[in-house]
Image 1 (cartoon, rainbow, N blue to C red):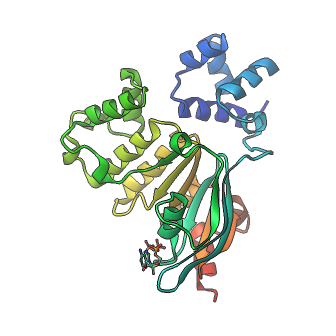
Image 2: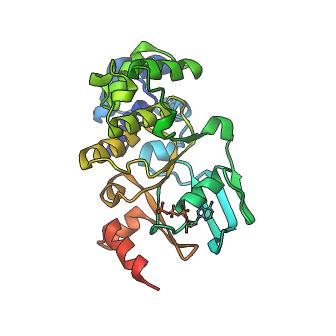
Image 3: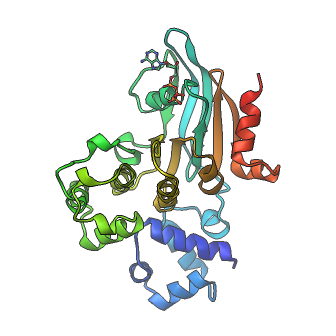
Amino acid sequence: MNNVFSQQLVNLRRQNNWSQSELAEKLFVSRQAISKWEMGTSEPDIDKLIQLSQLFNSDLDFLIVGKSIHKNQILSVNNLSKAYEYPVLKKINFTVHSRERIALLGSNGAGKSTLINLILSQQQPDTGDIELKLNPKEDLNVMKQEDNLLLACTVWEQIALVSNMMNNYSQEKITQWLKQFNLEKQMKTKVNNLSGGQKRRLSLLLSLIRPSKLLILDEPTAGMDLESIDMFWQSLDYVSGSVLTVTHDFNQIDKYFSRVLLLKNGEIYADSSVDKIHSHNQTIEQWYRQLNKEN
Ligand SMILES: Nc1ncnc2c1ncn2[C@@H]1O[C@H](COP(=O)(O)OP(=O)(O)OP(=O)(O)O)[C@@H](O)[C@H]1O
């Protein structure tokens, strides 16, 4: 087939936290068969491909060629405006599709947090509306800030508590999450004693215990050192749904994001795929600097 399929299979399996054996069991094939598909030395037949796309809740084209030809809209922002002492957002329009990784960019005071708060219904718009084509209770995740962590618990206890609440408790899964988020050594540490970057990684881990269709983050890496920032965004590989985040981590956007929205003068001043910007031999930072200095 192609090695995009092999890579997609590895990614989707990991996003679902399944081992090769677990996936093999669900498909009634041997673990060795999964291993060969992932190495690209053999291919599944069409029945198994269809079963895989159903198991991963993914389109066949996304599974095989890494792109969805028919994208599902999950959020639509229509003519949204908001003013405080002056207009902050003026007729904002954009849509979010399944499996997009979107970075929302803009200078300080451009209105990024206001836009996120409106999407989360934490504030009301003056005009316009937001159509969430998902169930906000089940399919929308927001990464909670540190103060929602239970400081007196150990890391393990905190994760166990949340996964119990979500009916998703399993010792093996917790061990796997700790490994993925590089918190294995801290499993017995009190949450209160974690560093700022470790607390954010724990917050992201907790927000992923319940898989969602859309994850919203507002400057999740603020104040982290470079190594922690890298580690944080790498963890996004384990997020299966779409991500909309406010961030100023330009180097990571090049690596981990598919689309950028630039908020400027109260409008979506630019909306581009990361691939398109790269095809013009620009990094996201160069693109941002160039557009942001235009009047
Ligand atoms: N509740 C409020 N009352 C009055 N003005 C507000 C309120 N919330 C935000 N603003 C103003 O709206 C503008 C946009 O603020 P917002 O926090 O959305 O910007 P931002 O793009 O997230 O900025 P930053 O990058 O600095 O976090 C700012 O000028 C801010 O002072």
